[in-house]
Structure formats: structure tokens, C-alpha cells
Amino acid sequence: MSESRTKRTHEVPEQQPEPQQQPRRTEMRVRPMGPIVPSTNVSGHALMCVIAIMSFLACLTLGGVSMVRATAQSWQSQISREITIQIKPDDNLDMEKALADARDLALTFSGATGGNIVDRAATARLLEPWLGEGLDLDELPVPRLVIITIDENNPPDFAAMRKALTEIIPQAFLDDHRTWVDRLVAMANTTAMIGTGVLVLVFSTMVLTVIFATRGALSGNRHIVEVLHFVGAEAGFVASEFQKHFLRISLKGAGAGGLLAALFFALAGYWQSRTLATPETDQATALFGTFTIGYGGYLGILAIMIVIAVLTTLTARLTVTRTIYEIDLIRSDPGRTDTYQS
Image 1: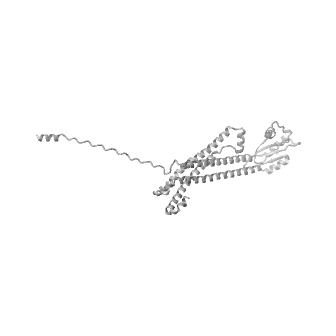
Image 2: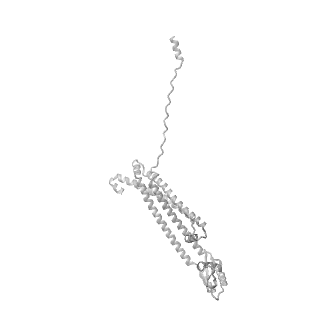
């Protein structure tokens, strides 16, 4: 009986207890490394505003210099392409015949490409701003003009032309505008020098402002530099982190200032093109020329933006390197603390 029970016990398999499920281990996630230099720093925002303002002023000065220089060159080119023969009225002189003879004589010289007689109506229009409308040229001894177009690269012999005109028409006077050209060249050079000086002053002010603003921003983060340096971070690594931070700030500030300056010139040119033949536009055009700086001006604005960004970045790197150097000196000689903190 006991044997049968033993057999039955061996025949029925024993139920094994189910293994308990192991709790899942939470996956370890690498915490993203935060920036060493706080991106939302009051000093950084202030520096960005300063860079934007100085960049705008520098780009505005550069555009103004290029605009004035282009206008002066246009004036010089227009004056140097023409000469004027002035014939004074005389009782014994047939004015119309004298004008035609002076034009034909001037065209015989090599370098004279064309001639145009200023008629009576055009002469009256030239005198309207001073003498008013309805002017009768027969009542006033008004000189008449002949405009001769010349080749700038191969001008005629003005002395020989002047001598020939005097021999044939004693009342004729040749004006080659050489005096006006010399004065215009001197004025253009003076204006360019003044504009370049203003640009240098603005750029120097921007350099000093960026340097002091960068040092001020770094002085607020000096403890970060000290901690990183004490835990063994190399000077190059610390400098590169600050360099990246200030590069972003300078790019944003310089980009904002440069884009505002470019937008100003674009809007001014658009306004000038839409308000032609008005007193305000005519006066602005006569004084400043056209508000277009061309591709060269916009490339200059882009170059200023790049220079500002590079300057700010190098200033930040040099300042951090100097700060680490001062920390090492203070560590080696604690007595120098007051010297460098002052």
C-alpha cells in the first residue's frame, strides 16, 4: 500500500513555483551639459545692445562716405566730359553765326566729339531762378553758350583751341572747367578724409567700448573662471567657452546694427525714387546725392559686421587668458590679491 502511494507520488510532477519578475532598472540618461557661461546674462544683453549701436553708427558712416564719394566722382566725370564756349554779345556781332562758327571750329580739334548750341529758350530757362519768367534776351547783354563734348581719355589742346577762338571771334571765351574740376577734386578728397576720420573715430570708440564691456561682463563671471581653473580645466578650454559665448553675442549685435543700417539706406533710396521732382528730394539730392551705396557699400557693411564679431571674440579670449594668469599669480603670491582686484 505504501509502495503504491510512493509510485503515485513519483508519477505526479511537483509544481514548481513561478519565478518572480525582476523590477526593471531605470535607464540612465546622460544629463545634457549646461553652458558654462550663462546665456541669459544681464551683462551679455547690455553688451549686445552696445555692439548693435556701434555697428549701426559705423555702417552708417561707411555708407555716407561711399555715397558722398560716388556723388563727387559723378560730378567730376560730368564736368570733365564737357567744355563751354561763352560768347558775349556785341552790336557788330551776329550771335547766331558766331555760335555756329565757334562750334565748327571746336569740332576741328582732335578730342572734341560733339557740340551743342544752347538756344535762346534754354538760356532763358537757365536765368529764370534769378531773373524770373518772361525774360527778353534782346534787352539784356546775356552771353550765349556752346557746349562741346570731349573725350576724357584724349582731351583736345585747350590752349590752341582758346587761341584759335580768340583770333576768329574776339568775344569768345573758352572755359575748360579745369578750375572747377580742381576744386571739386579737392572738395571730394576733403570730404572723403573727413568721413574716413569719422569712421576711424567711430570704430575706435566701438573697439574701446567692446573691450570695456567685455571685461565688465567677464568680471561678473570671474568665479566661474576660478572654479573651472581650480578643478583642472585648461586655459584654452575655458577661453574657448567664453569665446563661443561672446561670439554669439557679437554676431547678434553686429548683425542687428548692420541690418538696420542697410535697411535705412534701402528705405532712403526707395523714398527718393518715389518722390522725384519735389523740392525736398531735389534739395536732398543736391546736398547728399542719391541714397544708394551699391554692392560695394553693402559689402562694406558686411565686412564691418565680421570685424566687430572677430574683435569681440578675440577681446574675450585675451581677457579670459589674462584673468587665468592673474589667478595663477595670486595663488603663487597671495599678497598680490589687492593689486589685481583693484
